[in-house]
Amino acid sequence: MGWLFGRKHDAEDANEVLRRFNEAEAARLAAMTAGVAGEAGDRAHIRASTPLSVASGSTEFLVEDVFTITGRGTVATGALRSGVLRVDDDIVVLRDGAPHAQTRITGIEMFRKHVNEITVGELAGLVLREKIAVARGDVIHRASSG
Image 1 (cartoon, rainbow, N blue to C red):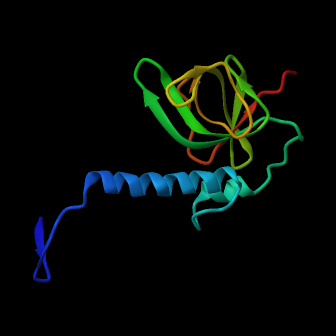
Image 2 (tube, helix red, strand yellow; image 1 turned 45 degrees about the vertical axis):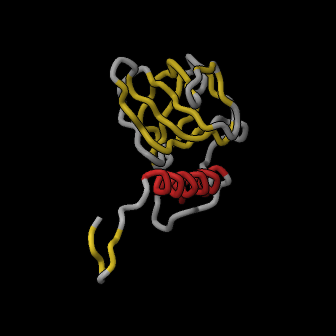
């Protein structure tokens, strides 16, 4: 839409910009779920590749992004790295390996559908009961039953 160095420079087609973004995002998410540190300095990716000191067989959900939806509450999106999470599970949010908050899952959503549980490798959004401070890079574990 403007002139750049003697030639007219047209704005990029919105579809082309969206296509490039989707390709980059798909590659980034694939690297994250594979446990590969994608971007240097990104705490979430570094933390994703470092093991936590938790018992084997435990549930581990890595938070990628957090949203607040009016009428629903806080939604933490990300990938389940181990275990199984179900609706009505009590969870603990870990930040830097230390317990940060505790709440309950009131719903699980996966790309325009509601489900009752997710398993390893699935990308999902966890609808949380209370409005708690969850951030990218936090790890969600199922609370111990004892």
